[in-house]
Amino acid sequence: MVNVPNPPPSPWLWRDQVTWGANLVLVILGYVGVMLALSTLKKVERQTRVAEAMVEAAANSAQAALLHAQAVVDSERPWLVITVEPSINNKNAFTVLATNRGRTPARIISTLEGVKIAPDEAQLPETPEYDEVVSSAPLVPIILLTGESTTLKSFSRDDASALPKTQEEVRRLETWDDKIFIHGKVTYRDLIAPPDQQIHTTDWCCWYIHGRQKSGLVIAGPPKYNLHT
Image (cartoon, rainbow, N blue to C red; front, side):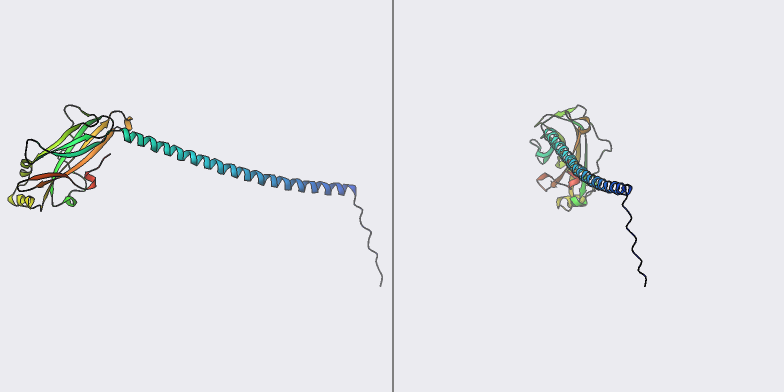
């Protein structure tokens, strides 16, 4: 058996040392670069989250300011409220009034009205139907200051008696099998609001209680007949 001696190790030349050192430096620089990049990305992510939070907070503040401004506008605008009062001079007669309960003047633009006979308010048309297709505008402009009222409609026992056409219809009204509903809409303008917020409406509906000797008129009707905008 012949023993072959191991070859002597190759000498580590200076050029190889320089190459190894350069590669080591490149690896270290690459690692440092990656770590710096990761750190920068984390900072950017944190800054992005802060910016998003600031934008969201600004949007919430703007929305709150808008709601506050709208609340101020609503609190200062005119509001026409419908009430019913008995006539002083005419027994079993009533007057439907629109009163400005807001803080600024209102100008009435037009009014609509209708009369329906139905067993109850649930049997009324889903959408109010008026006697006139085109709303009637006051001949003289009506401007209501705060607390002022104007008459929208008067209704009496004579008006109710003229509605039924037969004795059976009269009997059904007297026994409350059928009821008389008078309803309407008043459109008015806010005199101090911006142009896009000037027009408002108030829908109203009343039940005329047709008794044998005494009658009454009370606010009634479905929600769609008593809207405020």
